[in-house]
Image (tube, rainbow, N blue to C red; front, side, top):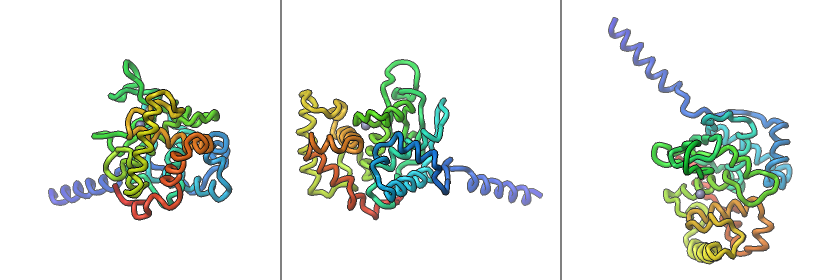
Length: 265
Ligand SMILES: [Zn+2]
């Protein structure tokens, strides 16, 4: 009898382990017309694509949803939230076939800005988004209003979602330092750092139209200037041709080493 009980118990544990939902992901086969209309309204990057590009973008969204859970803390997660999170993820890796964020399991939406302790009430709440570390590793935290603000039609070159996903790409080589090895070969790192230093000095002197947060560190410069690159490429090209060329080299076709595409992180 005890053998049978032990057997049943073991079976139960095995069944629990295998049935436990490790990620609450969405597996959806077809893209809905309402989602397409929303992207067309809200996402300039998507609107600028041709039919084949839009289809690839939509497949990227479904693939992202199938591999990353999107949850909310004290906030309802809508289809529109899911679309904007996935769009923020797809935009930086759009030119890299087969790429996935293998260092991410979950995006957690918050109802407002939060602080270092992930509180949305009280003092020192200035964080719009963050890539988690320690117990929060493999998670990204985003303020829902900041996510939506980033895709507002006025396109100010500030996009919290894109910003955080660029941090994740940078983190792929194990160091979040503004030098993503998957996007640049070694000889390119030195001229890139020279460009970064020059422009950070301009930011500090108040002589750059790149937002001041880009001057905080080399690590923040890359995501800040990437927001500008993906949101207002024409303006970046005319005002900062060297930076534009460097970013095009990093995020354009031919980068994002295919061997890295789905490598587990
Ligand atoms: Zn940042």
